[in-house]
Length: 353
Image (cartoon, rainbow, N blue to C red; front, side, top):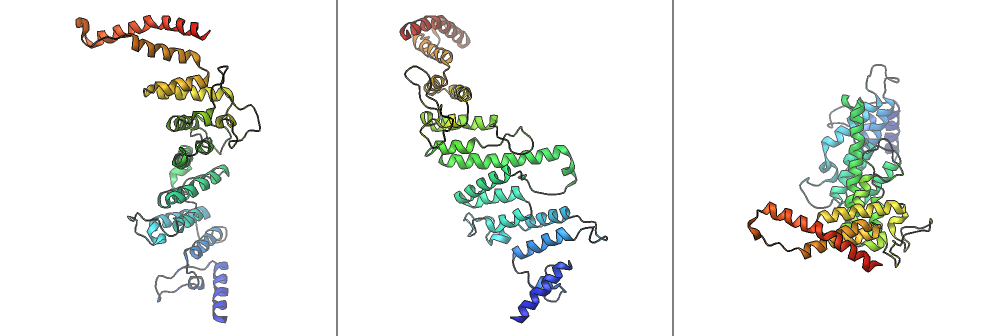
């Protein structure tokens, strides 16, 4: 209609003239023409960002508020309102919102409240929300977008505080990736590995790098031990005693070759497998440790493990025998183990050759 068309024209002129307020608090309060057509949160965010960009000291000498301060104030206002204002549900409700969390996450993203937006998606959106938050976080991280909530607190200008913000963004992305990969690691360990190798290195500074850090390798060791998918991830020991690894440089994770060889050199794979063996040995899992040592080609460590296991079966010291204390019995058993190790090592080598 002509009236509606005129209303939008006046609203456009109001935006061009930077007239405020954007909304009216009551029917009796004065308002700009823009307030008459702003009916949704998307309209309000657009108008607010428009004002933030244009209503600067260069255009209005009387104002001292910069564009960054306007955006920071908008972000604080959105967080003050909270998700219930946008989702239309009680914060204590366990049900998934009809929007899947996007009704609150989208305005937060527009106001550069990235950390809160991704966290909200992952927490309230169930499995789909975690999937979306993880992939969105990966895209933003590799695009060089910092994954923290933008604000202009005085401490933000300090370099140490800025580094803390970068670290918090990487920590959030790491939690998202690990949580998402853990959801299907048993059913598809190869795909889980694809996500874990993309974990950011918390010790690095700046934007994303192509190198795989120690934190990612630690999570890969966890993946190996929790799934016991040694063969699809690392291959198997061939008839000549070496590990069957990927030699084709064009190999992809979807191929039949060991998945770890698509991302690491043979030496790196052996190092990860050996570290995983040590981790599981600390938990008392000697069988998995032996298999991992064999896959890693660490036969010296494998022999030591077998020697200790044999010694524990050959030496039988009954508690209290000889009237010694518990500490003395432990020392005696350790001495007996050391005495049997060379004998077993020689016998093992004899049978091997």
